[in-house]
Length: 316
Image (cartoon, rainbow, N blue to C red; front, side, top):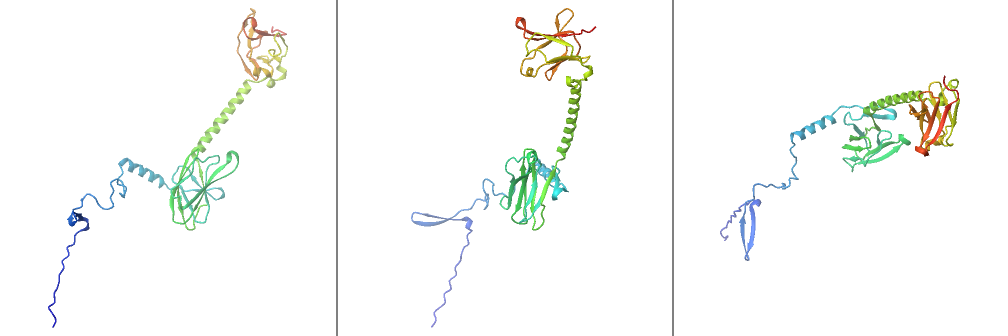
């Protein structure tokens, strides 16, 4: 005969794990439930490092908009020699496109020098290396880039002794630009002004040379060499003296360039030396007048050295 069936019903109380804590003390165990503070949630940190975003102030937002506008400028390159795609520097953000298994280069300005290592946003999946071509002041730096895979989008900063280049880099499965170069409108404008100023300075130099003509440039038929030189030594005496009917030229020896130059005094009718307008060009005294007598004086007092210059046929 089958006995009575006993049914056991077990009631299980579900307690949230976030409010459960167990304590063991004095050899016996007791169970205590504690409520977790409501202020913290899983994944939060006191320093805020795990927060997904940080609010921007109005000035920061405006700066972002300015940068976005510059990056969004629609600048198109023009075709250059040897397949170059030429961008106008500073007009906007140039886009550089390359593909895996391709070598693409960024060409800088001839004579420009890299300052430091180029900085790339994705240095793991892009290979970058510097190179040069050309000689002398026409040495041109280039940056060689190769992406390891398609679908990459990053940026690149290149600093030189003249400017900073900022570019966007994109990798495509097949499409690529072999060579990217730049034109520099600001430099071209400056160069035109520099050329104009150089031409102006050259004309001024030519005019000055004509006005300060040396003896070799004076017509022979106008020269008068009829002068007598006495006194002094070979270092102080001039090599020759002559005039062209308007100015007098006293040509010294070449060694005067490394010696102290004497002072020129014109002897007046009273027998005293007087200062007169003159200048020295290429070891030649150019006096803006004619004279009958003059002296070259080096030093002062009793130790002064003197050379007398006299016109043999005095002016009537």
